[in-house]
Image (cartoon, rainbow, N blue to C red):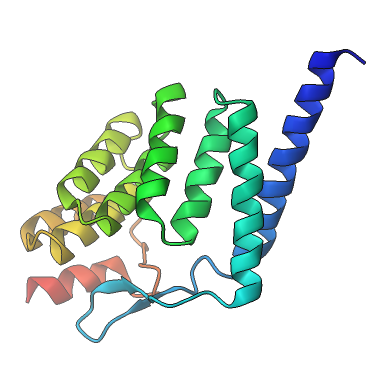
Amino acid sequence: MSESGNSVSKQTLFISIGVSLLVGFLSGVIYSDRSPDPGGQLVQQQGQQPAPQQSQFAQAIASLQLAVQQNPNNAETWAQLGHAYFDTNQPAKAIEAYIKSLAIIPSNPSVLTDLGVMYRRNGQPDKAIESFDKALVIQPGFEQALFNKGVVFVNDLGDRNAAVQAWRELLIVNPGATGPNGIPVAQMIEDISK
Protein backbone atom coordinates (compact mmCIF):
# COMPACT_ATOMS: atom_id res chain seq x y z
CA MET A 1 0.00 0.00 0.00
CA SER A 2 1.36 3.45 -0.86
CA GLU A 3 2.16 6.17 1.69
CA SER A 4 -0.82 8.28 0.60
CA GLY A 5 -3.06 5.26 1.10
CA ASN A 6 -1.89 4.98 4.70
CA SER A 7 -2.58 8.65 5.45
CA VAL A 8 -6.06 8.39 4.03
CA SER A 9 -6.68 5.33 6.19
CA LYS A 10 -5.40 7.13 9.31
CA GLN A 11 -7.57 10.13 8.55
CA THR A 12 -10.59 7.92 8.03
CA LEU A 13 -9.81 6.13 11.30
CA PHE A 14 -9.57 9.39 13.27
CA ILE A 15 -12.75 10.74 11.74
CA SER A 16 -14.57 7.46 12.37
CA ILE A 17 -13.44 7.37 16.00
CA GLY A 18 -14.48 10.97 16.59
CA VAL A 19 -17.81 10.63 14.85
CA SER A 20 -18.57 7.31 16.56
CA LEU A 21 -17.87 8.77 19.97
CA LEU A 22 -20.03 11.78 19.26
CA VAL A 23 -22.92 9.91 17.64
CA GLY A 24 -23.08 7.22 20.28
CA PHE A 25 -23.00 9.68 23.11
CA LEU A 26 -25.07 12.48 21.65
CA SER A 27 -27.95 10.36 20.42
CA GLY A 28 -29.49 10.46 23.88
CA VAL A 29 -28.34 13.96 24.81
CA ILE A 30 -29.10 16.26 21.88
CA TYR A 31 -32.59 17.31 22.87
CA SER A 32 -32.38 16.61 26.58
CA ASP A 33 -30.33 19.75 27.30
CA ARG A 34 -33.07 22.10 26.13
CA SER A 35 -36.08 23.05 28.17
CA PRO A 36 -38.58 25.90 28.20
CA ASP A 37 -38.42 28.41 30.99
CA PRO A 38 -41.64 29.58 32.64
CA GLY A 39 -41.74 32.66 30.40
CA GLY A 40 -41.83 30.58 27.25
CA GLN A 41 -38.27 31.29 26.14
CA LEU A 42 -36.22 28.41 24.90
CA VAL A 43 -33.14 28.10 27.05
CA GLN A 44 -30.38 25.62 27.43
CA GLN A 45 -29.67 24.21 30.81
CA GLN A 46 -26.33 25.46 31.98
CA GLY A 47 -24.49 22.92 34.01
CA GLN A 48 -21.46 20.75 34.03
CA GLN A 49 -21.56 17.52 32.12
CA PRO A 50 -20.92 14.47 34.32
CA ALA A 51 -17.26 13.39 34.32
CA PRO A 52 -17.72 10.37 31.97
CA GLN A 53 -19.45 12.60 29.42
CA GLN A 54 -16.72 15.23 29.68
CA SER A 55 -14.12 12.54 29.08
CA GLN A 56 -15.95 11.22 26.00
CA PHE A 57 -16.30 14.73 24.59
CA ALA A 58 -12.64 15.47 25.29
CA GLN A 59 -11.60 12.29 23.46
CA ALA A 60 -13.86 13.08 20.50
CA ILE A 61 -12.60 16.65 20.30
CA ALA A 62 -8.97 15.50 20.48
CA SER A 63 -9.57 12.98 17.66
CA LEU A 64 -11.30 15.58 15.52
CA GLN A 65 -8.59 18.18 16.17
CA LEU A 66 -5.98 15.69 15.02
CA ALA A 67 -8.04 14.86 11.94
CA VAL A 68 -8.35 18.53 10.90
CA GLN A 69 -4.64 19.04 11.47
CA GLN A 70 -3.90 16.14 9.15
CA ASN A 71 -6.42 17.26 6.53
CA PRO A 72 -7.40 20.91 6.98
CA ASN A 73 -9.38 20.87 3.72
CA ASN A 74 -12.05 18.46 4.95
CA ALA A 75 -15.20 20.52 5.47
CA GLU A 76 -17.11 17.66 7.11
CA THR A 77 -14.45 17.11 9.76
CA TRP A 78 -14.39 20.84 10.56
CA ALA A 79 -18.19 20.72 10.87
CA GLN A 80 -17.98 17.69 13.20
CA LEU A 81 -15.44 19.54 15.35
CA GLY A 82 -17.82 22.51 15.41
CA HIS A 83 -20.63 20.20 16.54
CA ALA A 84 -18.45 18.84 19.35
CA TYR A 85 -17.72 22.38 20.53
CA PHE A 86 -21.43 23.22 20.12
CA ASP A 87 -22.42 20.34 22.38
CA THR A 88 -19.82 21.25 25.00
CA ASN A 89 -20.97 24.87 25.06
CA GLN A 90 -17.81 26.35 23.59
CA PRO A 91 -19.37 28.83 21.15
CA ALA A 92 -16.21 30.74 20.19
CA LYS A 93 -14.41 27.51 19.22
CA ALA A 94 -17.52 26.21 17.43
CA ILE A 95 -17.77 29.44 15.44
CA GLU A 96 -14.14 29.12 14.37
CA ALA A 97 -14.61 25.47 13.29
CA TYR A 98 -17.85 26.21 11.42
CA ILE A 99 -16.25 29.17 9.62
CA LYS A 100 -13.41 26.90 8.47
CA SER A 101 -15.93 24.33 7.23
CA LEU A 102 -17.86 27.02 5.37
CA ALA A 103 -14.66 28.38 3.81
CA ILE A 104 -14.35 25.00 2.07
CA ILE A 105 -18.05 24.39 1.32
CA PRO A 106 -19.94 27.69 1.75
CA SER A 107 -23.33 26.36 0.70
CA ASN A 108 -24.17 24.13 3.66
CA PRO A 109 -27.41 25.39 5.26
CA SER A 110 -27.08 23.07 8.28
CA VAL A 111 -23.63 24.37 9.16
CA LEU A 112 -24.78 27.96 8.59
CA THR A 113 -27.71 27.37 10.95
CA ASP A 114 -25.49 25.83 13.62
CA LEU A 115 -23.11 28.77 13.19
CA GLY A 116 -26.06 31.10 13.82
CA VAL A 117 -26.95 29.26 17.02
CA MET A 118 -23.36 29.62 18.20
CA TYR A 119 -23.36 33.33 17.38
CA ARG A 120 -26.47 33.62 19.55
CA ARG A 121 -24.81 31.80 22.44
CA ASN A 122 -21.78 34.05 21.97
CA GLY A 123 -23.95 37.15 22.44
CA GLN A 124 -24.00 38.10 18.74
CA PRO A 125 -27.68 37.94 17.75
CA ASP A 126 -27.28 40.11 14.63
CA LYS A 127 -24.64 37.74 13.26
CA ALA A 128 -26.95 34.85 14.15
CA ILE A 129 -29.75 36.34 12.01
CA GLU A 130 -27.27 36.98 9.19
CA SER A 131 -26.17 33.33 9.29
CA PHE A 132 -29.77 32.06 9.30
CA ASP A 133 -30.56 34.33 6.35
CA LYS A 134 -27.60 32.92 4.40
CA ALA A 135 -28.90 29.39 5.06
CA LEU A 136 -32.34 30.44 3.82
CA VAL A 137 -30.91 31.90 0.61
CA ILE A 138 -29.24 28.56 -0.08
CA GLN A 139 -32.26 26.49 0.94
CA PRO A 140 -35.47 28.54 1.15
CA GLY A 141 -37.81 27.16 3.77
CA PHE A 142 -35.02 25.47 5.76
CA GLU A 143 -37.01 24.66 8.90
CA GLN A 144 -34.27 24.82 11.52
CA ALA A 145 -33.05 28.21 10.26
CA LEU A 146 -36.59 29.62 10.30
CA PHE A 147 -37.27 28.30 13.80
CA ASN A 148 -33.99 29.62 15.23
CA LYS A 149 -34.44 32.95 13.48
CA GLY A 150 -37.73 33.38 15.33
CA VAL A 151 -36.09 32.40 18.63
CA VAL A 152 -33.36 35.01 18.21
CA PHE A 153 -35.84 37.71 17.19
CA VAL A 154 -38.14 37.14 20.15
CA ASN A 155 -35.61 36.30 22.87
CA ASP A 156 -32.57 38.39 21.94
CA LEU A 157 -33.71 41.24 19.73
CA GLY A 158 -37.17 41.78 21.22
CA ASP A 159 -38.76 41.87 17.77
CA ARG A 160 -41.96 39.85 18.13
CA ASN A 161 -43.24 40.82 14.67
CA ALA A 162 -40.10 39.48 12.97
CA ALA A 163 -40.32 36.31 15.08
CA VAL A 164 -43.94 35.79 14.05
CA GLN A 165 -43.01 36.36 10.40
CA ALA A 166 -40.19 33.76 10.56
CA TRP A 167 -42.41 31.23 12.30
CA ARG A 168 -45.29 31.77 9.86
CA GLU A 169 -42.87 31.02 7.03
CA LEU A 170 -41.96 27.85 8.93
CA LEU A 171 -45.63 26.85 9.19
CA ILE A 172 -46.00 27.21 5.43
CA VAL A 173 -43.22 24.64 5.02
CA ASN A 174 -44.33 22.44 7.94
CA PRO A 175 -47.79 23.19 9.40
CA GLY A 176 -47.14 20.78 12.28
CA ALA A 177 -43.76 22.22 13.30
CA THR A 178 -42.92 22.11 16.99
CA GLY A 179 -40.13 23.51 19.11
CA PRO A 180 -37.61 21.22 20.84
CA ASN A 181 -39.87 21.35 23.90
CA GLY A 182 -42.79 19.88 21.91
CA ILE A 183 -44.86 23.09 21.87
CA PRO A 184 -46.39 23.64 18.42
CA VAL A 185 -44.98 26.66 16.60
CA ALA A 186 -48.56 27.81 15.95
CA GLN A 187 -49.05 27.98 19.74
CA MET A 188 -45.77 29.88 20.12
CA ILE A 189 -47.01 32.45 17.58
CA GLU A 190 -50.30 32.75 19.45
CA ASP A 191 -48.50 33.19 22.78
CA ILE A 192 -46.17 35.97 21.63
CA SER A 193 -48.92 37.72 19.70
CA LYS A 194 -50.94 38.35 22.88
